[in-house]
Image 1 (cartoon, rainbow, N blue to C red):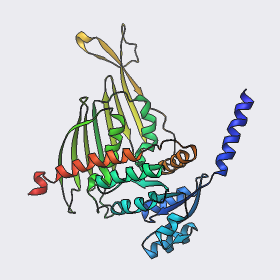
Image 2: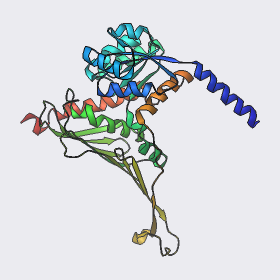
Image 3: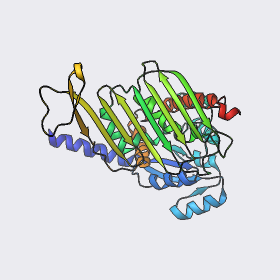
Image 4: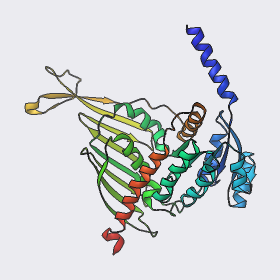
Length: 346
């Protein structure tokens, strides 16, 4: 039986090796180059070429990676089975519409689009085309988050800080769409409830939109998420803390570390090496410290591999188009509320 199972796995592996997904990349900026590099390392993909509207970028990327550069995005779209959209957010809808109406699978960098009306239309187009669409919320594939996921039950308070040093790249959108949307997606993934209320505050320091923002998201089940994002920090930080009944979970997305502190009822007296807490009439609890093993991995490569697997196996993508739309919807509620923040209207 074991031998037959092994033969079946080998056969499936051989079949999958024969199914090469022809893919093209739209956008050869900083992140686009990383995607090109990672796609070349994924067996399921055949990288047909890429397009960038900057002729100099096309030339440099083509020489660096030895990949064919296209002068026309539609020519590239027509030549592939799937398209990877890594262009500025403002053009996501334009290229997604071109790809989906040509029945091409699409990987779209976060945020899914600039406006929720665009992402809603993209959902319709994807359903009509019957293709796979995955959104690039890469922190879902962060090994520290993956290691912590088995410990999540029902978080009731979440504190997230995503701080970055200033970089002109990305200031075409607010800090909410540039940085905070990562944490919005994570929170929506781990909280099994609908958003009830959002309050915000923010300040525009060097750009026309908030460069530092805070959002308090309240859910119907009582959970509260307090998210802070800044692109004016002196140091980088990407850390989120999750609090739930008898447990505290810390995920450092930047350092790729996870820590779990759990409480368990203590029967009798604690041992000499035990760490305990006396709750008075409620008794005593033991404190357990867990450091989940974090497997080393490249999150961008893993998300692109999962996209390929969804196409080959005809399964749902790891981060669906609806996930991208929902994160964008909450992000835009925050953006709209920030417009009335005293610091923004003064």
